[in-house]
Length: 114
Length: 115
Image (cartoon, rainbow over the protein chains, first blue to last red):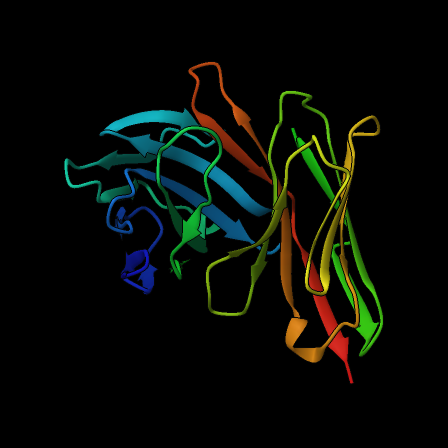
C-alpha cells in the first residue's frame, strides 16, 4: 500500500508570491490534515478536510487555504508569501471510522521563502 | 494557546539509559494520547498510544505512563539506543464541536542518544 505522497518535496519562492502544495492520501483514507512544522513551534495544525469539506481549522491567517477533491487528494495554497512562512509542510491522512484513528504522515514539502 | 505542553525540548541520554519526555494537557475532553517519532527528512510516525482508561501501556522498550487526575502523560524509553535519536511529539486527540477528531501536538523533543 502506497503511503502519503506530498509534492513537491522542495520549493523556493519569493516574498509576495503564492504557492500550491499537493497531498495524495493513502488509498481508502478520506481525511487529510495539514501541518506547519518549524523548529521553534513544533507541529502547528492548519486544517483538516474530509469528504471535500473543511472539518477543523487551526489559527492561521486567511492566506492559508486548502481544498480536497472527490478522490480525497488535497491541495494547500499560501498566498502573498512571507519570510515567516518558510517551514516544512506536512500532510497526514486518516481512515475515518468509529473512534480515534492513526494519522499517517507524508515526508513533507520544504518551503523556503526568500 | 498551547493545549499540550511538552518538555524538555531537547534531551541527551547515554546509551543504555532511560529517556523520559513529559506532556501535560488542559482539555479534559481529550480521549486519545499518541506519541509520534520523527527521523530527519521523514514525516512523524505513530510510536505508541494510550487511552485515559489505563494508566500505563508498554510496547517493547517504550512505555507511556498516564495520570488522568494530573492531566499528564509521559514517554519512557528504556535501554535507549543511538537509533532512538529522533524528535518525539506527544499529542492529544478529542472531538471538536462538530464531532470530528482533532489532534493537538506538543512542541516536540529532540532526543540524542550518545554511545
